[in-house]
Length: 415
Ligand code: TYD
Ligand code: ZN
Image (cartoon, rainbow, N blue to C red):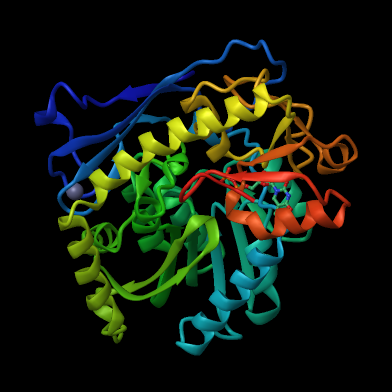
């Protein structure tokens, strides 16, 4: 059963509440009505439900969606499988190195990852720790992880699951929640479970796309129904403190358009706090006070109109255009400016479970990279711009020396 909770937003600010601090939120950006970005269609004419896509801002530094879908509707059958990517592998090594060097992880650690997907991060961790266990609600995705030897339970993580785990498996020295806390309407449901399963001196690693990168780099296509929060350090700190946890460390990276990896420990553990945290908090506050959020809204409108004109012109000149990367970002990007399969003939993507399906609403068919390279367009719209260098190199290596790439953010450019 679909259950979209329509939290009041624009017309009734008195009841539009920040789901982290309880404060009043204001609408920042309304992207209209959109289908959930990962609900790939099985035919290009399939009817698909749409829901409002509205970004709200709270003075505490939190950004959130005004209208949230149920996690079960979004994640029970899921089309997102972490791709194989050299830049992700490097990122995992860097993260793991940092955790080891700072004493958050060692050879004796028991690790649990929530939202572990096909298990790529756990596979990188496994040789360096005592044990790893994944938890993911998507049966089809967890099966892939289990087949690859990463033990993964099919569960929505909550307090009940956490307590069972603590009994059966013992408490965890490291709990990993990468790109998942912000993907639920109520992150406290997950956080409460984490507190139950975390060893007294254990560490929690929360990684998410960083709201400041999203805003500074005009990444409006990061807004889609799965992303129910856009975390700043302020927001993460608020959330942690409300559950007796302290933000002790932070690492920045370029993955997913700019991400933060935050380490937290129990406030009772007296862990030392990395000195850069206070400087980063100050920097965030300054940028937000200087109107960064409004600048982002203005840039969004300008990118949307430039992209529409660029694609229209290229098409009028007889160019064939494909998208590259059947990303959720691509669904927001293309639907927000009304592109269809008349503008973009196909979308190339390496994920087998996406191929043969269609991007929701715009109805663009997803094909393999091999097929796209054998039947190349004149231009690719880089909908997976976060893998820009890798994807351009891949196309060039496949012999597509003259194909051009439209990169939509931070500004519309043609490579
Ligand atoms: P991602 O940026 O993680 O997407 P989202 O916006 O949904 O979070 O997904 C990248 C997509 O790009 C994914 O569907 C796989 C595809 N991809 C390729 O087709 N080839 C590649 O070489 C890589 C690295 C990704
Ligand atoms: Zn708030």
